[in-house]
Length: 347
Ligand code: SF4
Image (cartoon, rainbow, N blue to C red; front, side):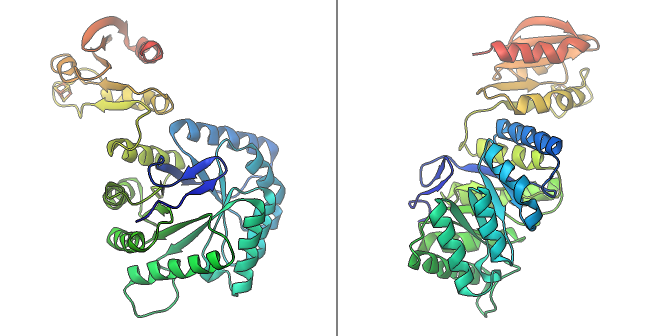
């Protein structure tokens, strides 16, 4: 079964019984300008406070060497270099200080090139992800899921033969069913950690729905050590979705759990607008609290009784509740700061 084998990525240990980690992948080229690098480091810091544990970058050009070296040194979370085709770029990324590289050995070329990459990773004490996608597999007549699992097992054998075991595997397809079958097959035969994802899953709604359906089942079966919800959208949403999935499954505790009513004809408080204004702040608060944002004062407080804090209102009169008790009345313009203040003081 997957997970008994442990893998170290900088300061993050993967394995059975250890926290499931959330990953994302930077969606643009690596910036070279110092001001832009500063901005990116701050953005990674925010992603980290939202619950992101690992970030991956495409590393296709030698010209990125200096900027990537800076990123690897300054990032508050481990940095992964994503390499395709050119083994020299993998060697270069390792020299930059990447904490893990992701390769598909099948597109690196000759076996000796893969071996050089693996030996360099071993010398530098970093991890490798063998990342296989259903669209880039060796030819074969077996069903896709079997081909994916068997190919990964074969590459793991190569790596072990070269004395390297700090390896994570990912088997991704755009079809959630194939993704699940491939990961289940692999997990029956190997205890190496798995990074889970449904690839090319579409825009926000379809990506989250497909990924949650597949990853939720695998994680519930004890399969998977890191996850990425791949979205054709922004990386903050990827992280939010990944963290929310883990929290929903009871696999991550910390963070604000937001309860908000869908609104109905009775709503007299713009819960949708209020949630949009405050959500980014709530996502970065590292407290285990439930906060309810309710649309009316008729049912809102009652429905929010189970929450640590609740907010609702009528027109310009906004009411704040703690454990179901009314504690404060403020104006609409004071509502956001009143809620954040209450969260700050909440135990
Ligand atoms: S809290 Fe009020 S506005 Fe929201 S769904 Fe319930 S009754 Fe409707």
